[in-house]
Structure formats: C-alpha cells, structure tokens
Image 1 (cartoon, rainbow, N blue to C red):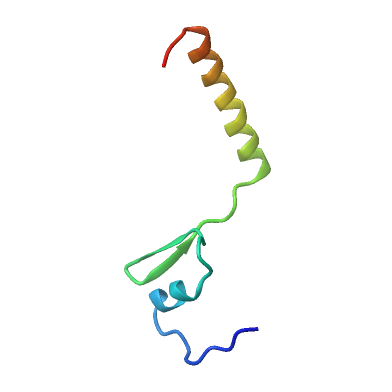
Image 2: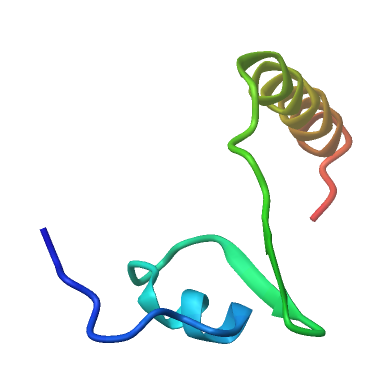
Length: 62
C-alpha cells in the first residue's frame, strides 16, 4: 500500500495519483470519470458494427 506524503488539494493532484491509462479527465478542476459500459451497451455496439460491416461488404464500399 502506497502512503501519501501530502493530501491532494485539487482534482489535478488526484488525477496525477491515478494509474496510467485511467479513463478520466479534469475540466475546471473537476475530475470526471465515466463508468465502464454495461453488457447491453457492448452487445448493441457489436450488433451495430456487424450491420454496418455487412452493408459495406455487400455494396463493395470502402
């Protein structure tokens, strides 16, 4: 467990403590983090991709 030498005072200080690759951003000193997508969302995106791919392949586009 890592011990903090000083307590973070700003959102940017907290951001700097997060592991590399953490999906978040700081806007106007507010830390925004999006939750991981739900299974239903992932499934719908997969189905949408398949439909678009079938259309492009079928019409010899791209």
